[in-house]
Image (tube, rainbow, N blue to C red; front, side, top):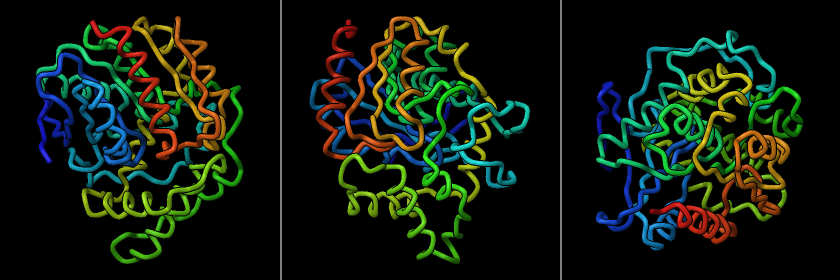
Length: 301
């Protein structure tokens, strides 16, 4: 899989699908502690088949991108506890602003003048921040699973919080336990709104482990995310067209979290996806693709 190095010296692994001569670029940003493969390739390919050039990449500290292996952070809570935390409580080796800069660095390295950004979970926040800080590079922004981190929003489900607080086994010395834990976590994130695709998730977990796992990277990314605190002031500064999609059964960020994002971004469109959790299972590929295609096509020129 190819990589690029940004002007700031960050290596980013990426994958592009679709016609290299396509006039419209969709760039997909992935979430916390996961790799570009969490944007399922069949979904990306079906989107590319609509006539787009679709690029997905590993955020820094994941997959084939630059890692920070010598920087170890203590465990400082989980996303389930992230509402209302003080930004100064989290000292990260990099910030979400850096990750937004990485996104623009990828666009520059690939010669993409303007992109339609689509973000997944934490990737939605990175996409939103990129649209806010670098508006000249972004045509539209789509958020799939998102939260404003408004401290007044409802919390994650207690069951998910319990799973996320568990000790993560070492994938080198406790491989079987690690794989079992990741499957348990993925099942909890998916919620109960639709059947859990065990075969897909099993493949993803093993692929991520072999492809570019680095212990501690999720904590470092979380520190960057959590240090942002309440994100509403940034959201209100986004002026490109925005689409917000969110599952009605999301156990991590209840749907009110995404509604708050849509209410805060001027003119944003809100599309609930009935039965979807904090995951994009294959039964929702068609809905997600159709919504992105319909939205992006309106602003393609």
